[in-house]
Image (cartoon, rainbow, N blue to C red; front, side, top):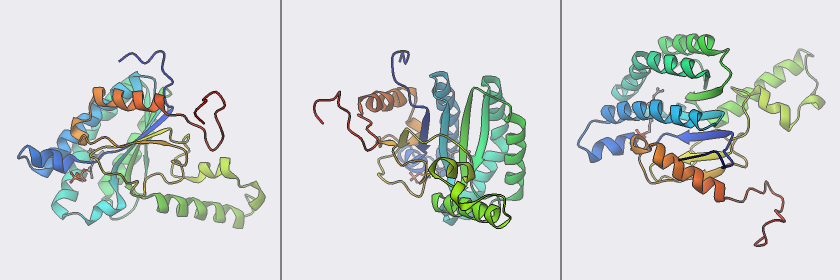
Length: 244
Ligand code: FPP
């Protein structure tokens, strides 16, 4: 689809949901569903950046996902370690910086933490866009963490309480990113599930029934068409729209 005359969102966030059900419907294992999800993320994220979106956040693994079977958790961690190198190369070619949001500690395996840090270091000078991958991530923990960072700075007399405001609070989150304009959760679930609570305040939300491995560029186009129809008022009134 041609995006040239469209008002494209700056920051899109996607909750990657439905890998398991996609696999089950095809008589495949959950692991095969995750592999298909990863392949789709590779293709879809390239398309998204090619269309001029500047920031893409994806919920790849929540802190709560550690409650899944050891087999499934190990599979996903290994998938990341084994397959992410090719993804890093792709993003480097496109000038996309890769950042990660989430707690960098147990139960996340040390080899995953090391790789996260290596990838961030390797792509940190890229300027064309940012992909923010949320692993061992929770929205509450992000806000609590930011509060702790601020308290520490205040206690060390490096920051005064009066200097903290809604604009610069963002700076203390896992990554300092613009607010989310469009949130997509695939697979028909209509929940936020502790994702980017601070950044989602005025996001438009889109909940397609499609499972993530099948959420391709055509499906993304539909989300963008829907987004362009929304009347974003940010709590105000749009006087150009007579229906208000
Ligand atoms: C949700 O589907 C998906 C996940 C918990 C994992 C998402 C991971 C990827 C797409 C691969 C990328 C991986 C990394 C580590 C970058 P689900 O398993 O909850 O599906 P279900 O609800 O149908 O069971």
